[in-house]
Length: 175
Image (cartoon, rainbow, N blue to C red; front, side, top):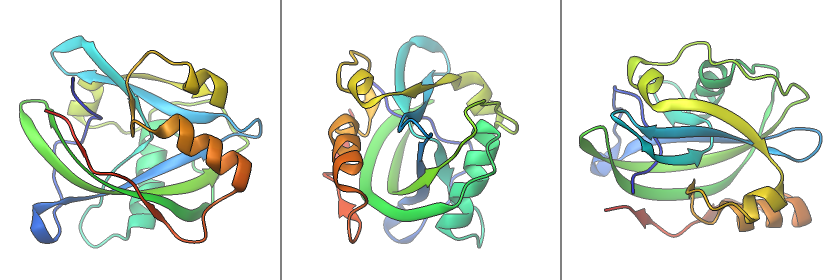
């Protein structure tokens, strides 16, 4: 089992952790957009994950979230909401181990057409598409989804709204 793909260039912060910004993008029907990824040389080793990626240079996590969303989906007409969740994770992907500190931002859009506009070479080899998921579809999914508790987290978000401050999720380590 692998985890969500990452671009070929790594940005690190203290402790060697790659700083990552992810987007929990909801449409007017409260569906969440997930990307479908896989190991570059093994499409059968696949999973679903939220749009996002590594912070580059001096950009903020907010700037990284918006840039990654535009690159991976073509969607630019969003305003980022609060940080919902924070997570540390470690996983093998494309022949190496990735150690990440991820922040998940809430965003909403009225646009549901998705078109990847600027994928890296590694992303072109490992991202197979995208899909809007309802909460019940996500809760009943048999596919691997990251973060692993996403269905429950989404249900809480839809029922209670964003948390007052970011929720720290359990660290996920994929062997």
